[in-house]
Amino acid sequence: MSHIRRLGGGRRKNVKKGFQFTLMVVGASGTGRTTFVNTLCGSKVLSSKTCDNPEEAHIEDGIKIRPISVELDEDGVRISLTIVDTPGFGDNIDNEKCFQEIVGYLETQYDDILAEESRIKRNPRFRDNRVHALLYFIQPTGHALREIDIELMRRLSPRVNVIPVIGRADSLTPQELTDFKKRIMEDIEHYNIPIYNFPFDIEEDDEDTVEENSELRDSLPFAIIGSDDFITMNGARTKGRQYPWGAVEVDNPEHSDFAKLRSALLSSHLQDLKEITHDFLYENYRTEKLSKSDDQIDQPDTSFKVDEIANQNVRLKEEQLKKEEEKLRDIEFKVQREIQEKRQELLAKEEALRSLEARLASTQVADA
Ligand SMILES: Nc1nc2c(ncn2[C@@H]2O[C@H](COP(=O)(O)OP(=O)(O)OP(=O)(O)O)[C@@H](O)[C@H]2O)c(=O)[nH]1
Ligand SMILES: [Mg+2]
Image: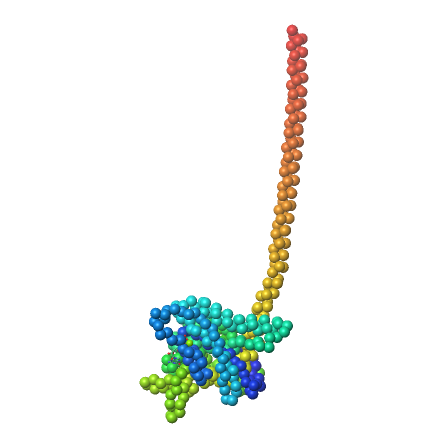
């Protein structure tokens, strides 16, 4: 998506009124999506999946897509944040169904807008639920992208701004994390996955934007650490995870990219993500959808062509039949003529025979 120019500028326009932003979280089961959402919102807006009854643990309740909305205050700016959680997929469930539901959800929001745009009378209570950014949670395996991640990100990126993140990133040492990030980005480039890579234009954008965006791009995929708990560091209470050997702080840039991602999503790049969603992703969807329905309108034309070809075939067959009939008539005529000639010949021979007999009889009478 590097061809999309950063549209910036408008982000400070609606400061007083506040902003609406919709974020979707997608990823394999247990990658820390729910914990991330709760950490971002500063409260337990989502409950983690718990299964107390082992007898029911195998029952997959399928993917349920449920948006929830929270009001946040981001440095004095009111943000109405809608979170769309998509319960994780695993290795043993039917992932295809799950993928279809996620992509289907994104497209349904576009369909709703499309339908609303074509109404003569606008619905004053209409809600734009388009997803502006999708955080794709990658498992902290330390290897490379899995096939399932590549496939899903590929399918999602034409419809939404996909931002790859590594969940539970405290499982990796700093060196492992650096290498893992590098491999993931190599895979994304290799498979040509058009993720949201903080696009900028060196010639057109100002120096600050270029610097800010290239720094964010270099941090991709963001290393995420989430926690529902508070720890005390140097006498201050902060969100973090306490381990027997030490503690990790969610907001500490030395420990994770959480703070960087939070400020990109809710402040610096909120407007850009929304604009790309509307001007580029939705516009592409709209064009695809309308050209598809145009094709359907063209359908009678195609069937007309089919009819035309069928008619032509019938005409050719008729001509062929006519020719064959003529040929047969010729043959019949010829045969009849031949029969006639043979009959004439036969009559002539009979005649000759009769005169021969007559001559023979008169000779016999003369001899007697
Ligand atoms: N080490 C570590 N553990 C984490 C982190 N975030 C969440 N966890 C733990 O990982 C487990 C799964 O976290 P969830 O937030 O429920 O993960 P999820 O992706 O929502 O999982 P499902 O919805 O069940 O698919 C929980 O035990 C969390 O406490 C993290 O940043 N680091
Ligand atoms: Mg969850």
